[in-house]
Image (cartoon, rainbow over the protein chains, first blue to last red):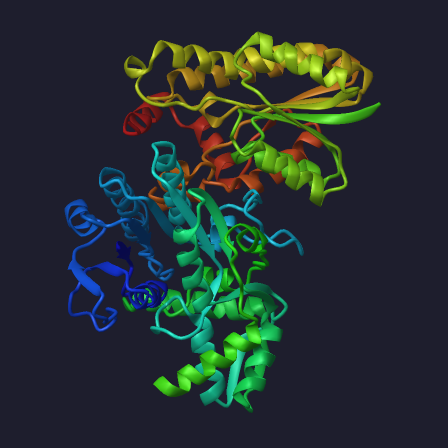
Length: 328
Length: 256
């Protein structure tokens, strides 16, 4: 069996490509640069040069495929140009869906994000049926929501699809913009102190990358042809996450807390200076806000309907720490 | 008898934000919107997170028949309406010559006939529950006359005139009528994208619906007549009153 995979040079896509290849599935990986060091290497992975923003290259790679995994996205929150997000996440997704419909793909598995649901309301975990309460916080959330609307529109045209809304992913794999927890572990292992904003009670959901990959495979194999699932792991506050990592890495790091507003003002100031001297900003106030919003979620629907299972956070972290020691 | 706030077009955008804010303030809600617009999910969310009663009606309010049906159903369930928020509306979609006839007629029905009819149907409820209020959602388009918004602007200007006149008439019953005229808001994804691409100055006037809803309800309950949410929009309104028409026409001519 052959499948098309987009986003193979990204964090999730890379791991997914290898997992599919190991199951003797031929992966058509659509990549912009055939020589990218991030491209997954395996005898069952065939690299196709192209770009989802270009329909013809997408159509070329989709030929003879049974399923499509669409994991490509523009995720760089530091970018100020909405069209970078729009072109890849919306127009690119439309190309993939159009090609999938034309080439009679059995099912599209679309990798999306928990953030399309917005923050969680009080202590209530986000579920698939929660209406979005707050407006879109950034261009990434907006364009991923638009792409989900497209997936649902194509579902009405007869294209089978499953949307997976993944929470914060961590675990072995490429070091990209999308795995902040891995970076955090490295900091705990190497640094003597870490300055953080004093909102350590803000709680998010953390999912182990192997579980995310597994959810994609389950979505493909399942009899369910239309659906949307939150793929998460454990809910944890920063405080809890920090103490877990500290314990597991046997780190002696000192955590210095600074007032949130002060940190935000500092980043605003830095951003203005960086803009004036035309440097790419490090962390913008918007990115900071998105990191400290509550995103508690539940994956009960995926557990029930896809037979999805989540790895406990401490176990996943342990494996990640081992992996990072191996690679650094 | 339980008292309710009735909100039309409550499933998305400004209506959804108004519904959540009303729930936050402890009001029982009757929410109405088109089928498959996410209304059921919103109803479930409101029921499970706020200590209020919620009635959900998925229906198309573009016909008189359905407005009557809504009234009958509400009465059948023993509810009485204290506040009515006429929010449901059909947005503008392009040049007049390109618009299908049915689209225009539906737009006039939903934006004009429906709020008028609902106000009339529930008038006895408002009288019985006084002090009670009606909030009609108009638009800044009722003041500014832009191309591509012909029918829309017209319907919104109707709401403005209708509300101001009715306000004088039914004050004696302890019923007040407010009109809210929002400017641009980040509601649908398409509008969010459009707003995101605006220039810096125009973008400062754009509000998130949850922010606009908070300000609107606060002023509605202080019985203000015309509500313009957002500081920048208020400045636009002031400028509109002082800038000569010739200059304004030149400015708006470029908005095509």
